Amino acid sequence: MEKMLRRAAERAVEGLFTLSGSVTSLAILLIVVFLFKEGLGLFRSPEVEKGYALCVNADNPVEALHPAQVKKIFDAEITDWQALGGQSGEIVPFRFDEIFARYTDEELGEDYALLPQKLGEIIAQTPNIIAFLPQQYLPTASAAVKTLPADNISPKDFFAGKEWLPTSTPAPQLGSLPLALGTLLVSIFAILIALPLGLGVAIYLSELAGERIRKLFKPTIELLAGIPSVVYGFFGLVALVPYIQRTLRLPVGETAFAGSLILAIMALPTIITIAEDAMRNTPKAMREASLALGATHWQTIYRVIIPYAASGITAAVVLGVGRAVGETMAVLMVTGNAAVMPHSLLEPVRTIPATIAAELGEAPAGGAHYQSLFMLGCILFIITMLINLSAEAVSKKQHGKGF
Image (tube, helix red, strand yellow):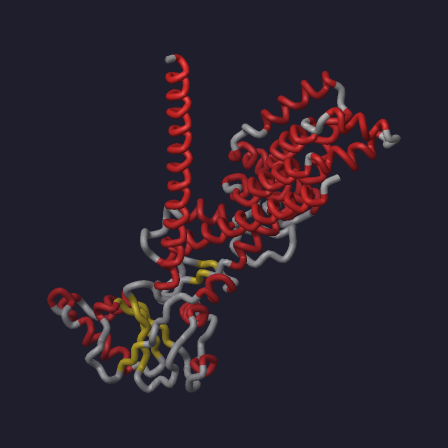
């Protein structure tokens, strides 16, 4: 009877674990599907702001405009149609709200019924005009008006675009390249700083430090891993950023370099703790055999302990890189939050997680801005997945080599 109860309890626990794993896997799968579903919807959104269109005079030979050209027109950076393949003439940008400065409500008719007619007259009388109008008021009945085609946002414009300005009208600029490069720049240099320091401390605690020192340092380092990222960001903003600005004589201290230092500090506890635990798990017999064969202490560390702990060290590096790539608040506070193409560590940048955190609350649900933020999440997911696959490949290679 007792054996039957024990077996039933074991089966119940096994079933519970199986159910828990299945639910977790399903939840992760649904999250990934939702992420990519929302993100890929971006490429079905029009280049011009949804619900609006661009109109020109029918005699204008220009047949289509790129979103970057539209932005430059309405920002007065391009002022002549000749620069766009048309006839020479000063471009006259026209926004919809300007119609109300020209006509009274009585002239526009009840419920603005005469708006399309009045807009058609303005476009017909202004050969060099480009009008940004709601689609519901387009003067489609006028033969003097030509509506420029609006293609959907292309993957090339999103992934290779160099300007991120999603609130720009009439055409939002959704180039993610500055954000992706900013993320990689900050993360790579953070790991280049944290990895040698973390492994060095892990080797010291595991192989060189006395028991008393290890018992003192290990809990302290583990405690650092529990500090909220906003505290690290506040420390960086108050102490590190002014120091970098003074020391390097920079216009501003909020730079990619400041973000790399903060991320390196945040990644150190993870790298140290996991790598040190992996090294200490090396069997004592292997250490003693190496020393018995005449190897020095350092040779034993390099030839035996580190290769044996390679999978654990790799896991430490992966988690450290993941912390660096996915960190949001601390990076947002110390990197300057500038969505521009990075050229050096000493310039302000913006990362993908910081962009999502800063803009998701303001993006209208279902719009191109909203979907572009989900697409940025897809990029972050792919980067993290590639890091994990690379680490797994390195770990398998280490196991295949043996000692």
